[in-house]
Image 1 (cartoon, rainbow, N blue to C red):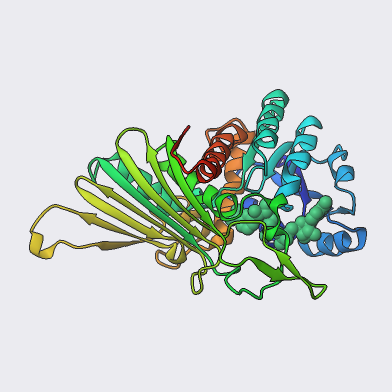
Image 2 (cartoon, rainbow, N blue to C red; image 1 turned 90 degrees about the horizontal axis):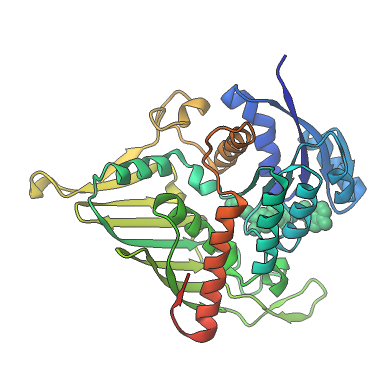
Amino acid sequence: MTATIGVGLIGTGYMGKCHALAWNGVKAVFGDGPRPRLVHLAETDADFARQRADAFGFERATGDWRALIADPEVDVVSVTTPNAFHAEMAIAALKAGKHVWCEKPMAVSLRDAEAMAEAARASGRIAILGYNYIQNPLMRQIGEILDAGSIGIVNHVRLEMDEDFMADPEALFYWKSEASSGYGALDDFGVHPLSLLLQLFGPVTRVFAHLSKPYADRPTREGNRRAVETFDIASILFDIGEGISGVMALNRSAWGRKGRIALQIFGSKGSIVYDQERMNELQLFLADGDAATQGFRTILAGPQHAPYDRFIPAPGHGLGFNDLKLIECHELLRAIAGEPARVIDFEAGLGIERAVHAMARSQAEQAWVSL
Ligand SMILES: NC(=O)c1ccc[n+]([C@@H]2O[C@H](COP(=O)([O-])OP(=O)(O)OC[C@H]3O[C@@H](n4cnc5c(N)ncnc54)[C@H](O)[C@@H]3O)[C@@H](O)[C@H]2O)c1
């Protein structure tokens, strides 16, 4: 009989649904590992929790997340609440002996992120962060192209992450404009490009950042205006080790950009270009052969790019954002089983947090900050 693993889910918004879809689908897609048993779901009130539990397929529902943590049948907890709750919930789950799958950013303060890493170490449990973009099969392919040396020695990386959900100056003030959520674009967006850099090249070694606010205030539900406490735009220079310089541009108020994570990697023998808005293709330029016929070629995702084949046998049909989360869920289960897994755990995640806080310090001091 297939083993099961008891799942708890805290939060059922955008990411909560995404985790629920992953837990519901992972066994069907991959076929291996334990069968997730959706045991307990927590929301801010009991009625809403019950509604969501019915929709997502969870057995029990609660308006008190601590009841979920205390449930002995929960083995792993998805934390998908706003940033300010991550540390408290993840640490409580680890202390109760649960594995943790926590959304990014890890925490708002560096002290909380350190406490989370410490709690993970002390627990001996698996604790990972929701860095889904590293799970794109084409990101693995980019890693293989780099490892094979096909584009030579990499000397420059450019990353942009832009969306327009905060582009309207009259959009309502909500938790993402509060300082309790963090710095703004830096930790909401910056952590994702940092996760890609970490996976492909290693940690950034120094940073210089400039943060800005496109709008000073926003309307509230109550009909007033409230000062925006976070920076929706960030521009960062960075280095990775000795040889690679980089630029990162982040904007949560970039009209027309919907889910852009544009990555350009330049090497001594070629270049790679990728954009999350076209997540099933990458562009490769190799500086070889006849210059007259050189040019970028498009590589379309297909079953040869594992684990695309687990979803669909046909090439070019495309994976979606939720599929990346499902792959992340499978990697988490591999880590729990003691198998090698492509995950960013709390230890590696702490490095990303240190980079974010170094960027904020750079803005405050108007100087390069080394890590
Ligand atoms: N990995 C990604 O690509 C990605 C994308 C979007 C958001 N996120 C992260 O996911 C987290 C949640 O963001 P979201 O967009 O899903 O937010 P959201 O507002 O859509 O959902 C948050 C949910 O948490 C619930 N909640 C709040 N406090 C709670 C509590 N004390 N107990 C139980 N439930 C509670 C809310 O009622 C809501 O349903 C954030 O940390 C965000 O940075 C990650």
